[in-house]
Length: 163
Length: 98
Image (cartoon, rainbow over all chains, first blue to last red; front, side, top):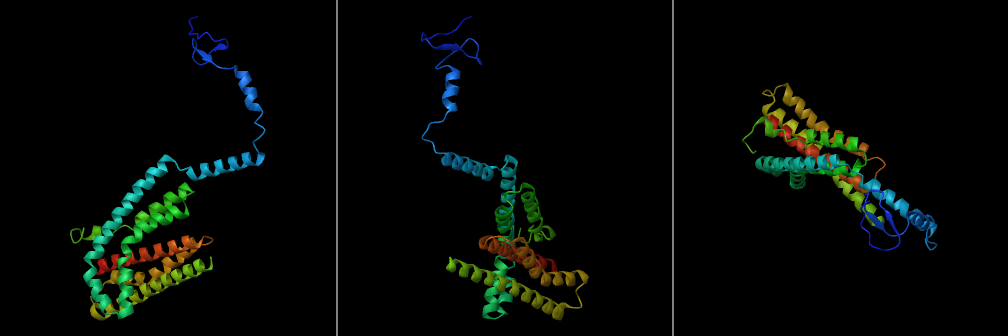
């Protein structure tokens, strides 16, 4: 059989690539070396490391599909917020009239309650992510409900007024 | 730690005040509508105005239920979300009626 040989004494045939040789020690020798761990490794350290590895895996375990869904829903939420903002601007004159007629404190409250409306889709998205992030089904359901509840309905009923 | 708790309570009470104001504003809206164009309104606007009054309480209840056994930050976030959704739907109702 043809084989490249370097001339060093300890060569063996590669199991995965027949015809090639692997330089280095005997696999059995390697196994033995890794079987007994170096004496300076503390047992507690090993446990800690395993635990932190588990944690990292759990928190990072978000499937590709979920990430794609988060991207799409996040984008739609931003779009919704934009549309809501244009509607709030469209009605801001009406709102200012209402605010002017409801006293000094009432006017401020009216303005706050009116202008926070565009934040609804964004806050819903953040809330869903903050509360049910670990449960993929619940996350999907929460995001879908959010898309329905915070849908800018004025857009459908008379298009052209604001957006 | 204690300052944080006080701050969280103050923020929560402010949010509650805004929920209260949203209810009061919805009631005022209903009263104003009924005085100015009461006879002109069909059944749907009346229903919508009623929904507008009930909405702050509904969303507050839902937010508090969902925020059970969670930290103060999440609770405040959910309360704020409920308020914003209420505001958005109020805007929607205003648009549908006017």
